[in-house]
Length: 368
Image 1 (spheres, rainbow, N blue to C red):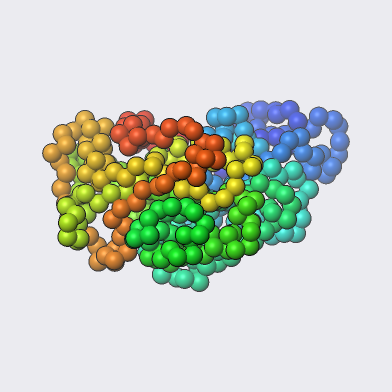
Image 2 (image 1 turned 30 degrees about the vertical axis):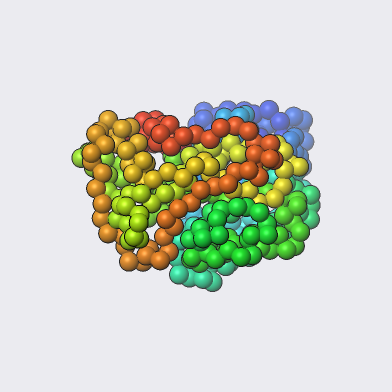
């Protein structure tokens, strides 16, 4: 699939630039085309969910590190998330169903695959089609993980902090806690189910799972209701100086004092790159900032980045379909991640929101 503005990297040798700006492979030798197209000069990384929020930022970050040896896969359907891909450099785009078929048939087995970063999933926490969630989030994940493990290919996958439910049991990523967790929705259940499978099968000793907390940042624009508060609140903040937050429906917790661990998407990309480089670091890891912050703090940071006073924070009732399914507190315990060797500091909420707003949301082209 060819996308406008995308750069296609060479599998076989030097790159020729045609007058349209798209890069095509030039064989090192005068081999027949049918032979040349299966020659691989270097290893490649498969990224699922590559057109989505986190996946596309990961692609951009790997490009910035000089890596264009990427095979991208996603489920585009009616979404406009394809807009996250133009400007990126990669070898090939493959539909998510075709990817599995080509992997399992051996069509991609001829290629030297270094790693699979499995970000793709149905992430809508209000999705009620349990069969769809099981197919996309659990069964697909098992198949692609099994393929990678069987061939000794590095496998990194996205789990979610949603597996912790209401947080009653805390937020430790210790394996012995996982069976006792109580997810609050179908999406979280399928993520928990795959974590459980990885632990019980013993594969957790050979792969890396990342439990993303509340991720925000550029390229989330197609996510609609599931996009971050920063994205949804930005138009009213910049135009009217107002940010609206959910009221609290719990006694003892003031409006806007619901707390989440907000993690900037660029930090997610840095951590994934760490696991790509460190194959000995395996297990399931929390991935957040490590510090719970109130929605009031987030709103104040957004208003400041919009050059508006903090007095513009307002509150409205929580939607009925979120009551009883809404997390009032999340905070990633990062001790396991730190013990694995990732020592870089996480971006503060204030710095992350400022970068997102000033360098993306306030720009004519907000994509990374």
